[in-house]
Image (cartoon, rainbow, N blue to C red; front, side, top):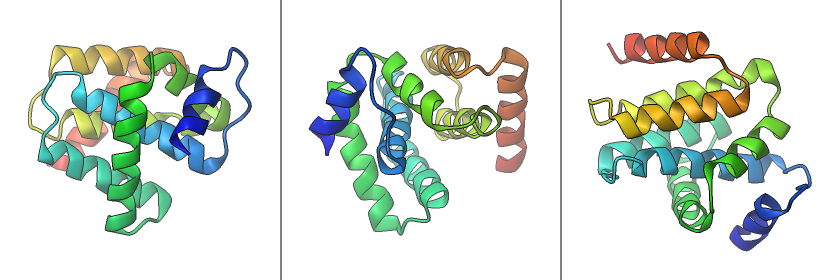
Length: 147
């Protein structure tokens, strides 16, 4: 599955992803974000697991397994553009803000905002067609929910 997803992502004109592949691409994007500041801790892993469980109706064990597969995919993928392109092709524009919200949840999981994480979110938002204002509103919603 991992090699298949990587070959799909690496193709110049990739085939549309299945829903499972899109969730794996999202999980890998979240892992890439968590690793952006070179500190991938338990709080970030737990947050990714909760996001994946909530989005996909997965059990905690299934979400953890998906994240672990995503860690492998992320380590092998050459760039972030491939993840966002795959998600953009699969997720309608009106639902892409949920990807940015998930990214903000991961970025804020450890209690701090790092420049590397913010830069990656800005890049992903741009590639997904989400403007800076909507991304900032997504961040504010996540911060408010965190209390």
